Image 1: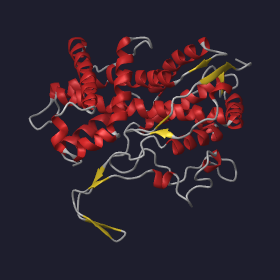
Image 2: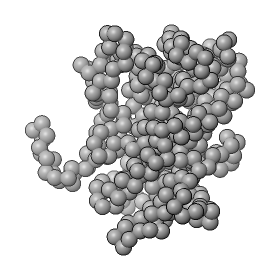
Image 3: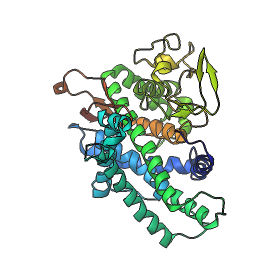
Image 4: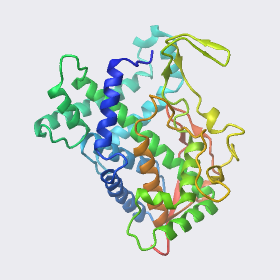
Length: 377
């Protein structure tokens, strides 16, 4: 059963308010993202002219950005902690939508057996244990009323909570887990999809770079505000999100009353699992529903235009609360990297396979890329 009760509402309000206060959609968040991108740029510079696998690189970048929001902390890419956490989450997302998870949901009697789905719970406990350590560090170093990050804000709430409040340290660890999952896997997988398509549609990559060079001429770095002057780049990013469909079943919903919909009676309390693919590739909603084509987001004047059927972050009260952060990351990271590098599909890689790997999120099959510094950089 999906919980829309007082606890969910209280924590949802708190998370939205806190993320806004820490710069979601503001300059402070933009600076954090751009700072993290420089570490990705250094990785690519070291591999210029060579072939590399981008999977871990993009996961590390997305992980560090959300870690700074939650815990005020970033990790070096060779740090064993971040390697462990990224690996745990990669395993969990595969297990959670695989056959063992289906058996776990369908046959309660097997839940006590030592079967492979237990690995997901072990990995979850690894993260919760790490979160517990970070929360304890915060309790020692925080100054009441002067929060540095999400954890400090939550601890302030705990300090001032009334008898009716449902805040607790256990819920803090759980909400940190939820936000970390939502802020890491979805963004990194969308970036992997982005560069898979950009390498295999080089004319689109070149058109992006042409627009980027024109808009950013004389500027040291991109800003999120620059997206308003880049209709083609915006169209490409949205088209990538449409085809990536990273969370195809979105957040589960639940009917709050008996409902009639298109001739069907849906009782109160029914779990609703939507299929976002039904709108993101629906005939009649898109000019080219089954193709990778930025024209899906451009009007006749070449201006950016977003159809109503574009809803990768879902809709309604449970739509993704990290939408602003995700949109900012995708734009700033993609533009920064395309401005400095060209990405080439390696000859030895053969024909690209765009079929995603299914899990809680959809992710491209592992691939390699060849990186080349652009001549004007």
